[in-house]
Length: 200
Image (cartoon, rainbow, N blue to C red):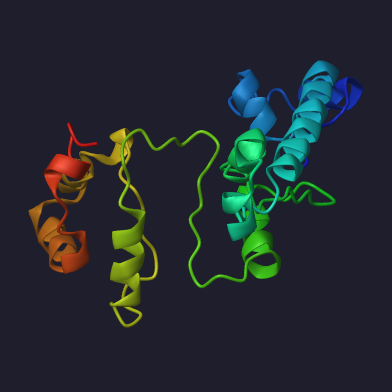
């Protein structure tokens, strides 16, 4: 996690001394936290959250269910333990940086020092998958693209009308140039029944 809490005294003095210049930045709690400004209570809550998250990851374990587990005569009794191994937090650990880096540099640290797989799925804490998501087809399209697809962004409500916004801002000529660059890999010709508005 990206450690960004400060004391009440520092946050108050910093805020007051620069309030004329950065009023918009610190106009609400969310903006203040983004800039590393937190009250003592918020700092305590954040520390408690990190402790709970570390425990959640540790309790999840590796997520490996062995054949011995499956054939154990006491399997029913340990079924709860096995279920815990299947936690979404299995094979996960919390990495806390020594100082505040901001989202981009914290992510860069993770990619450079914590990841060994060729593909990474970055899920921000405030971006929830609301429907079934075609992760496997996305990865297959990247594998089969011979390096032409390096990044895939999932659609959000805020960018569903991006094409119309782009057209109104830059004009039809720029829109045509944009659309000419769009590729449609066959792996992502998805069944709307599974991945559409009413999909599973």
